[in-house]
Length: 241
Image (cartoon, rainbow, N blue to C red; front, top):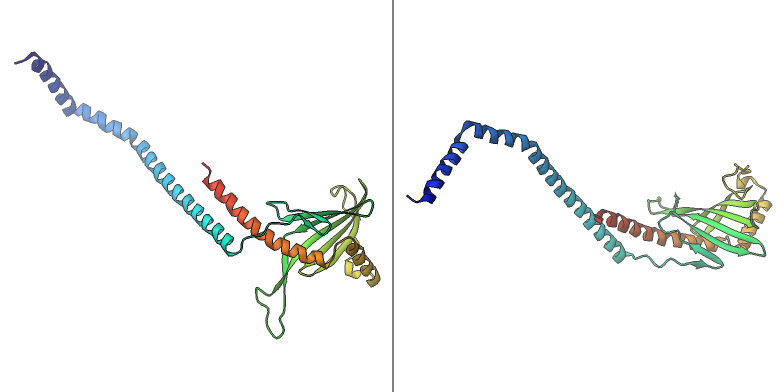
């Protein structure tokens, strides 16, 4: 018998006895019991991560498809930076735009325009109005400034697809938050001649039916642009690790 065999045989016996002993089995069972919650937690975390990845992947795929559909069906046009004498600030990512211009020697005109914020049904001759038979409404706040820090003559107007309608006219401080101004009576309660004069006052400054047509077309295009921008922003956020 070789010396190597004589050395190995006792080691085999010790290993066999150790594995076969009740104490060793108890130790292994105890160890498995101790790590079982960790194994379960790891398994749950893995499944949860897989589900999360699948959900996010599906959202990203749907957004990509929707973006491509909108671009193929009716791609938005480039938003124009000017209209007549007005400079247009498109306010990317926001629900309004601003138009500004100079008038005369010291007047500055500022017009803040919302996206579509309402509608009224349009009755067709001999028919009943449907969900598509509506006139969309846009709110316009027109401010007339005369010099730095001066009070402001402010008009609240409705812009319909082809006309401007004044709702209110009042004076306020340059700082809009400084005080709550008296806003006067409803515009239609004013004398007819005074109403006509105030319409003429705005028309001289470019606040007219032509501007109403422009802002409606502009907002239709902005609505498409913002929808696609929104989808791209959400997709990029979800893709970010």
